[in-house]
Image 1 (cartoon, rainbow, N blue to C red):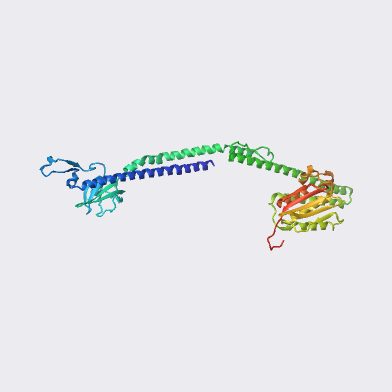
Image 2: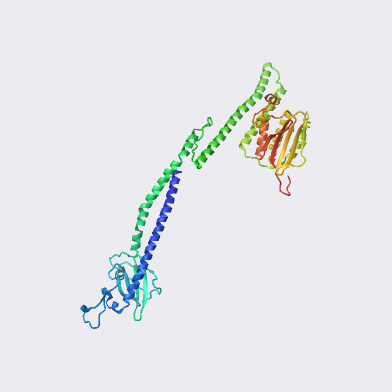
Length: 483
């Protein structure tokens, strides 16, 4: 992570600083060239105006122009001297007539005309001060010019007079622009790499400092084992994502510790519950072997049935722990309730205490076998405590909700125990539950099934007996489909 942070910071610095420097270089270079063009325009105009006079053309190549009065017969009698503009200065220009003949030239243009065979067009651009690009050919001898094989910019100025037509070509030298951007180039070559390395180093240091709490959390997590889950990661008071991560990790550790504790209690309770029927089976077999008689088949049958029921409940709870929430097909809870209540009356001996109240279909989406198991467990729990009457009501009290109520006239459930009865292996009356063969898993399984189907199971208030209520979301089938 530190490497990625440093690399990202270095890349961002390269893009921002490098891009900014390149943009600044472009602006400085463009402004410098624009200034050179503006200067060349004024210079070309001055040269063209001077060369347009007859006196100036008299000896322009010498650099000194004279206006000789008619009455003066020798050169010493020059009355007035005219110095040609920019003659001898470090400025490259050429004066060309309308046939392409060079009339006057100096500087780099003179070198490339003489050494490289540079020529000028006979018909220059008609627009004044319209720049053109020209490739300067290398010298035809062993000499080497500063601008060999480089494309340079020429600024032509075309001037038409009554008796003479000339074009002044000014060479736009990029030396001034290159000198202007030289500091930026030095920064790009030397300063930019150093700045990128500096930013990367700062990002490396800052990310390492920011990740110190994460490293402490990692070290603390490495020390936590299944045998001791009491430790928690340090929680920095920074108000940022690191603190949120520490809070989330500690909450997760709390849930894991709670799950591990529940698992330990479950295993201990399961072992305790399995010990009783196994001990009964062993005792019955040992008595039969010791006295040489047959074992009591009734005891063996009851004990084996209890052991089988307990084992099935444990396997069912284990399956609920590792499977996703239930999905399936449409199930009518009203029909299931009526069927289960009717089946009770056909048992031997029949149980006539059950009454089903379910007029309309109550459709839910889920697994039929699990929903049947939920209702069976609720009915078994009521049958264990009811005296004379058990009413099973399936209704739709409001749109989108299906409610199943199992109400009995037994001793009821104390308010303090209304949540504890849904815990695994929990018993309100230890002696009576054990005598009836209950292991304290029925209501726990029923609540798990209700929750897996998006609902809930709870103990409702009632003035007489107990009332267990399961509420599940109603499933509305599309129009025209059958349930």
